[in-house]
Image (cartoon, rainbow, N blue to C red; front, side, top):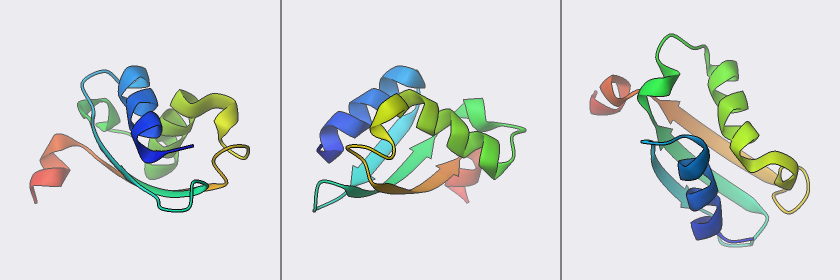
Length: 77
């Protein structure tokens, strides 16, 4: 698994999102996801939205992912 593939999967699952993914070892990744779809949602709900875009890859090809999930307004501060 690579960061670019993960980025594309998240962007496909959350249209309009801005996504940055980093990970050097192919199993541990860090992602920052910015989308208006997160507005009014608690962090756990936001993370679940991102995990849903990755499906069975989580816990499989992707061993761990640290997430930073922000609305566009939060990203500007």
